[in-house]
Each structure stands twice: as C-alpha cells, then as structure tokens.
Length: 216
Ligand code: GRF
Image (cartoon, rainbow, N blue to C red):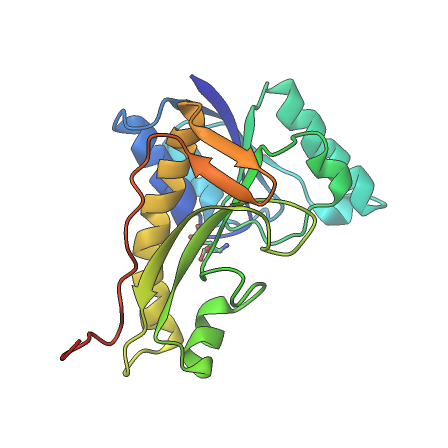
C-alpha cells in the first residue's frame, strides 16, 4: 500500500479521479493528506465528502517561500507520504522541497511536453493551430513542466475547438493517466534513468495521426 499526498489549488477533478480509482480498488494507495494552498479550493469539498484529511497551507502566512514549503514538507513527512502528486497545484516547487522526495513528486500537465509548458496550455495549443496535443504525467524537477515524462496521451485538436472544448477532451485523458501512474508507482514499476522513464511490463504502442490519412 503506497501512502500518497496530493497538492491542489482548485477544482480537484484529478484528485477526484484518484479518489475514485482508490475506492474502486484499482489503486493500491491511501491518500494520507491533501494540501491546498487555496482555502476556497473545491478540492477541499471533495475531501470532506470522502473523509480524506486535508490541510490548507497558504503562502501568505509565511515570510518566505522556503518556510511555506517547509511546512508542507513537515506535514507530508509526518503523514509518511511516499509519493507526492501535484493535481492542479499552481505553484513551482523549489529544489529545496524536491530534495525531500527525490524522483517522488509527479505532476499532470495538459500538453504533450515540452510543448506548451506553463500556464494556459490548452488555449495556446488552439491558438498555435496544433493538430495534436494532449496531456503528460512527469516527474517534477526544477524546470516548469519539464521533468522526465512517465506517460503521455495524444488528443486531437478539432477545427471548431475552443479552449473549453479542448480542455474538456484533454481532461478525460488526464483522469486516466494520472491514476494509472499512481498505480504504477504503487506497483513499483516505474524506473527512472536520467530523463528516461520506463514503466516495467507496460505495453508501448504507436502514435495516432490527426487529421486521418486517406491515401497513405
Ligand atoms: C488540469 O488541467 C491539470 O492538467 C493542470 O491543472 C488542471 C487542474 O484541474 N495542471 P483539476 O483541479 O484537477 O480539476
């Protein structure tokens, strides 16, 4: 049984996907604590409904980023957290935080990184005219959404897409790849060698093409 901590800032639909996976018996993990930096995050409601311990740690309550992060580390360590999951957590963690959980912090990002790292990834994919975007689960390092990739899902961009419709289509895959990654960690199948991550025993397939090819 893997003890995890989840960091959130908002809606918490990815948190919900993990909760659902655990309740359905598909993930051998326990959420020991959810930490939100935002007292109004809807994610906190989800915790209440599922009797999951949650804490609010606001950046404003601390003199420095370092002290803010130290408080989160203290809580996570106190709870014996072995894997930290960033699920819509809207802050960049410093190396100081990360060295407490080496290769054990993961994040979900709504693009095929390294494309569209940072904020508003879905809007930028629409504006850029990308034909395929998607979502990534990666190991968190000092870069912004640039750490070693565990899994990616490709999602087509349709001609009529808006930021909202594309975000919704990507989100459906976020809710699959993030819980799956947590389970891969729970099973001890994630091997990280530098930038390359291998999920032992996983099947690796081929990329879809969008728009569909006709004569070739
Ligand atoms: C998701 O799109 C995630 O990829 C990004 O922030 C959003 C969080 O959504 N990092 P939710 O709070 O999980 O609903």
